[in-house]
Structure formats: structure tokens, C-alpha cells
Length: 312
Image (cartoon, rainbow, N blue to C red; front, side, top):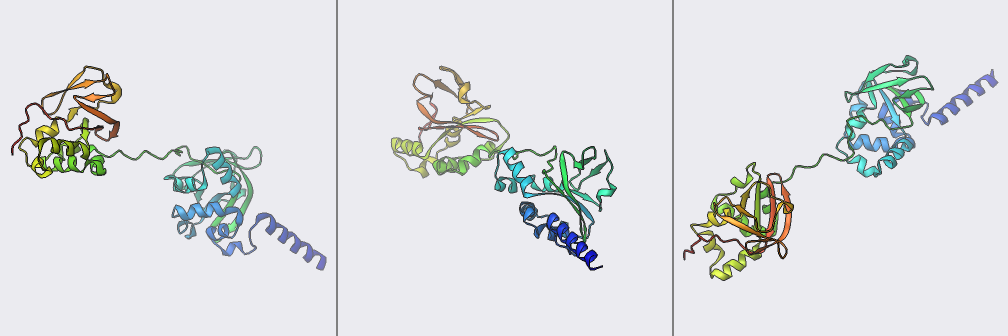
């Protein structure tokens, strides 16, 4: 009898060591079991980052196919990203929920070809032809019972078809937003506000704007012998500003030497490509700054229409 008891104790301890799970696992929830194993530190960090810890501590029951650290490391290498990149991915929660099925599904309940809908709304497929596979991932340790479900350890991270490695591109700012966000365009922004053109350049467009810098405006003020306040008070301020705007999105690659373009002010500007890129006599110093509603080309002098008359 004592030999039998010793054998059973040894067998139980061996199972605990193999599974890496304490004998009192059923007294813990799924997150508690994962947190108690060094093999799931990346999984636990991901659950914390995605805000899913509390969800998997709920009553459930849940069935979790839990990838080990080695599984996560293989995924990171395959995607050529770091753990930090993965934890900051906008679809992290979707990936994690792809590993969770509602209900307690034991290995004995699995059948070849069966499918199960995950909490992420996607489907997993069971393959029993060679061991136990969930999609292409092998179950290496099944049936680790928790008080709110069961864990099956898997050797690969399950990645839903909807996962995109590159996060969705953030929407581009508008032309006005770009100008407002740059210290080089404070005079231009003040002029647009004074002339009541901000809303117009926040419209859908698209527009092409040849944007003079503060330095360009300061050169104009010096040449005219006026202050910035006097420039903003000019009755033709809007005409000057609209002389810098062309309808449509014209990239630098679309420009041709000698071409002309009609501005929103009704007057034409000329393109000169013989020595760099010039708009009339103004040099383009930075081209093709794309915006949600067009493009900006930075210029080094203010374009002044021939119809402009300085009022002192």
C-alpha cells in the first residue's frame, strides 16, 4: 500500500512538473494559472496590455488555447518585429481573442474537422489526423483545468486572417493643420485667419498650396516697408493668399517647364524648371508635403499678383 501511495505521489509530482502547473490549479482562474508559469509571461503581458485580464478572470467558462513564450518568439521572428511592436499593435486584442472559445471544451470532446467560434468572432478548426491541432498549431499539453474553464497549451500563436502587420495608416492632416503645426508658417496662418480663408482650405479640395515661410513674408514686409499688422490689414490680403492656391493636387512630378496654372484668385502663375523649381520668381524649397485635402510646396518668397496695390 505504501509503495502504491509513493508511486501515485511520484506520478502526480511528475505530471505537475511536466505541465508546469501547480496541483491546486483548479482553485485558480485561467489568468492566475498563466501568471504562475514562466512559460506564459509574454501571453500574460499581452493580456494586460490589451485589457483582457479581467475578462478572463470572469466566471466563464472559457477554453483557452495558450501559446507559450517559445510560440510567441517564433511569431516575432517570422514577422521580424519585437515583443514591444506586438504589444502595441492595434489588433492585439483580436489576436488574443482568437485563442478563446466560450465554454469548457475538454480534449475528449474534440472531433476531427470540428470548428469552434472564438470570442473574436472567427472560427478555429480541429485536426486530429496527427495528434491534436488547432488550425496549424499543435496542442502540446491539454486539459489544464481552471476554476473558470480549461487551458490547452499550443506551440504556435494563432493569427486570424484579418490581422495586418502594418497598422492602419493614420489619416493625413489637412493643409491648414499642417501649416498650424509648423512654426515656419505662423504669419501665413495669421493671414489666412484674417482673410477668412481657413475654412475654405479645410474643405475637401483637393488644393495645391505654394506656402511662403515666415522668412518669405518678412522679406516682403521689408521690401514694402510695412509691418505684419499693416499687411494683415490690406484690403487685397485674400487676393494675395488665393494667388498661392491652385485647384487640384499637383505634385512636383506633374510640373513641366513653361506650364501655367490658374490660381483660385483668377490669375495665372508660371512654372520654371530651368534651375530647380520656380513658381514665378519664387523657389520651391520643399516639395510634395501631402495633406488629406491636397499638397503643399514650400516657397521662399511671397507671390504677389500684378493687381495688388499697397494701401498705406
